[in-house]
Amino acid sequence: MSTVEHSIATTNVSAFDVNKIRGDFPALHQEIHGHPLIYLDTGATAQKPQAVIDALSHFYAHDYANVHRAVHTLGERATQAYEGAREKMRKFIHAASTREIVFVRGTTEAINLVAQSFARPALRAGDEIILTQMEHHSNIVPWQLVCEQTGAVLRVVPVNDDGELVIEELEKLISPRTRLLTLVHLSNALGTINPVRRIIAAAHAANVPVLLDGAQAAPHLGVDVQDLDCDFYAFSGHKLYGPSGIGVLYAKETLLDAMPPYHGGGEMIRYVSFDKTEYNELPYKFEAGTPNIAGAVGLGAAIDYLTGVGIAEIAAYESDLLHYATKAAGGIPGLRLIGTARDKASILSFELEGVHPHDIGTILDRQGIAVRAGHHCAMPIMRRFGVPATTRASFGMYNTRTEIDALISGIQKAKELFR
Amino acid sequence: MSDLRDLYEEVILDHNRSPRNFQKKPQGANRHAYGFNPLCGDEFTVHLVVEDGIVKDVGFEGAGCAISTASASMMTQAIKGKTEEEVHALFRKVHDLLIHDGHGEPPDIGKLRVLAGVHAYPNRVKCATLAWHTLNAALENTQHETVTTE
Image 1 (tube, rainbow over the protein chains, first blue to last red):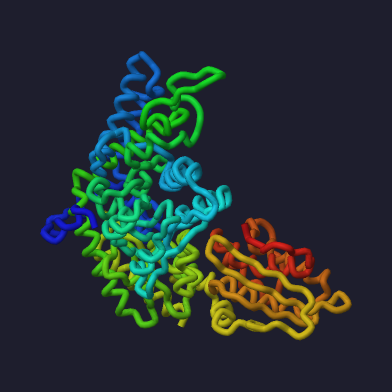
Image 2 (cartoon, rainbow over the protein chains, first blue to last red):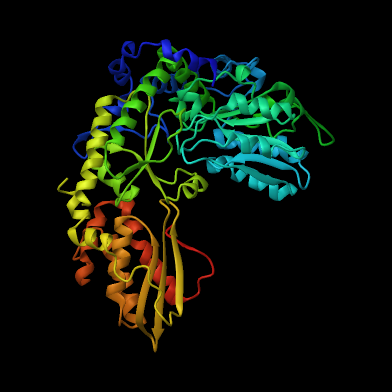
């Protein structure tokens, strides 16, 4: 756990003004099938505060131009806004330098970048990459591709019945052939917070670099990459209450320096001739082409918003919501939670005897309640728990206990209908 | 909740609770296909005994939501004893019913008309059609890969 989490216990949950926050999110104030919208799918993507919507609109209306090349005023404003967002991001995750903040499309692209630019050139047949049974497909498939390309093999860390990693097994899997350990920080399917500091220490003791998939963790836990000492950290803007199509790869500067570019094109070069091309400095070496300029600006606004509310306060508030929901769901006969780890955040995944998740999803939707029903892009962990799918309610800073009461009563209605 | 009853009619709930011809691979089954909906993970295998162009027997296995399970169950009842031609025609009618645009009369398909409620839930149409696409593939018997609803 990061240091941010340690301060949670001292935070006063009641001081958190959820009504004020809800007022900042216009999408929440609408009716669905005659009921007020209850949005419990923030794990898939978060709704956007007005500040983010306004930042995008203002940027396009006043400051838009391409970045890093124009001498004109708009070009300068756009560059400042784009690089300003990078600095906000650096501060948000406590990176040492903006040279370590690469803007990408999202978590998926960040992981693919590491697979192709870091792992692929180094991997030889028989080398090993360790990942876990609870990974999202985006932290499985890029490694399968690179294994096909190099003859490397995957080693999978098992998960226990509570949805926790079996750390002893993980430690046993680290071998002289291990080239990388990649795992999720906070599981999207189970809600498990993995003990990443201990895992990183074990990996580093064997000189194995570690990638963390922080798509869920970044908005809910707070991240300090230097404190964690992770080598790579990948996450998406849209789950951080920012725009879709923008995300971040954090990587230690020494690693980025040694890596070849992921994409070739404009922006990522310093000098081009047909004999030789010199690459641009970090992080531009990894940002070929015109980037998602407005996306980065919007993400910067999202970080301002998150920081204004306070990530520790958000974490504490959501933790209270999850405890409340877990207790209430436990009182429903026939409901089985999938993912009962000691350390959890923001995700309530369950199955209900006799009612398929897809049917629960439809029945809840008719009551205005948005949840996710399916395999959550994590089929291997669904198989581990012997279910084809689960229903998942996931919480954000704008959810309330009243909404959880509505969820519980909605689940009861599904049971009645299927009785 | 009342509009939910249009989707989850008693007949559908009943077929979901006790699917007909379920967990059954009939003796002499000579046509098979596996269908999968990657969106939700629903999967069914359909087994057919086809003799002299007639579906003599049918069974299905797998797991899915109430809509896909009930649709599969009702399908097995509807096609038993029918010729391949008749089954193809029925498939087209069910398909038309589910994507029926509201203009003109919906097709007449007897008991299967309870599936019409799915029409109001566009993201559930694929649940209702999964077994039927799988049936089609089994009849064609040309399947080398998984049938999907995508």
